[in-house]
Image (cartoon, rainbow, N blue to C red; front, side, top):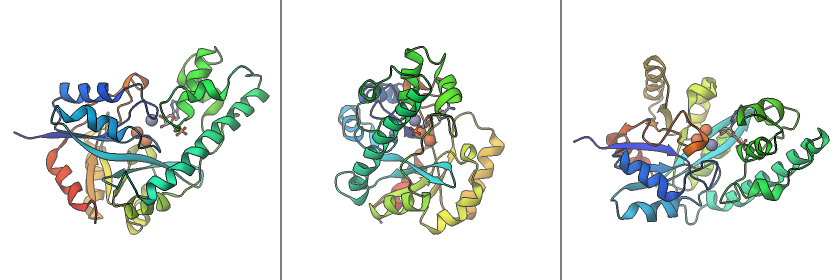
Length: 274
Ligand code: AMP
Ligand code: ZN
Ligand code: FE
Ligand code: FE
């Protein structure tokens, strides 16, 4: 029987609403053999999910989704199988999360200048279970206080890229993110290339050590999947995939919505810790 995996899942340690127990319950329901936890710029969810998964025989691969930026464009780099206890990546996350918190404070200040005067950093920070606070949490506060009718509206009106209360994030290039993951024993994979639309960066990123492309992703046509599958093959890097589940925070996807055969996980594991 073919075993299946979902290698892109968020928890409430970043911007999903799901607890570790909920993620594991969803994975069991979807009959997955393996999942990877890939929170934005934070690893706090890895061990709780591993603990919750243990009695179910569900395999959990340690992961992360690192933010990076090049010429003003947000590029997400997934990392798999790095040393999540002690590594350059673990050390660097302290500064990255500090910058995330400072950035939200700056956006709250910008909002004040726009008349949005009743949002505090503390209430935004409470929306996640770690230091990895982000714009989705600020957007939720804007909706709760009636400044926007939906999360999307909050992004469109205030905090979307280039919006009046937008503030750029911790500046690391995708090349630096790839090196950080690789130097920590992990495999770096470009997340959702079909949405990032920066295919011209794939060749230089492969040179910097990129080990894979996230070929399988929810709501993609066969043509798109085939295109990135061929691109991965051309560069002799892996094809990975996952749902990008965020619990109730993203209703168009869920754990197991995208599944990949376990053979691809085996390929990935061969490249870890090298
Ligand atoms: P941050 O990492 O704090 O910059 O937040 C980025 C996250 O915000 C992304 O991963 C998306 O989930 C979400 N996001 C970005 N743009 C939008 C948008 N226009 N509408 C809704 N969510 C968005
Ligand atoms: Zn997210
Ligand atoms: Fe992403
Ligand atoms: Fe994601």
